Image 1 (cartoon, rainbow, N blue to C red):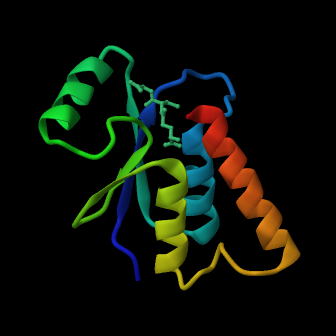
Image 2: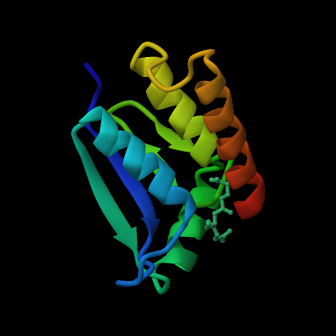
Length: 112
Ligand SMILES: N[C@@H](CCC(=O)N[C@@H](CS)C(=O)NCC(=O)O)C(=O)O
């Protein structure tokens, strides 16, 4: 059983977008995990980023997730954490799993 997860990402409006958060959101939904999605407005970001810097987090970017005990940054790291918590549900060793892993890495490079 996993803690409730809160996912933070920018409010990108009503348009369908392809952004880092979508991968995390899809995984949470696919796994049926209890979660909340917090849209950060562009106007809120400078203050939130300053807060993160002040707290000396290792990253000051979105998306991040908060669980009952920690805050985790970086899309791929977040996804690996969730998958690991689910007993490796999303990272196996089949050819399909390897393709998914490669796509995830490419996505990470794209948004870096
Ligand atoms: N590879 C990182 C990229 C994080 C990243 O650059 N996020 C962007 C939005 S897609 C961001 O927070 N930009 C605002 C900023 O850097 O101040 C990830 O996947 O989490």
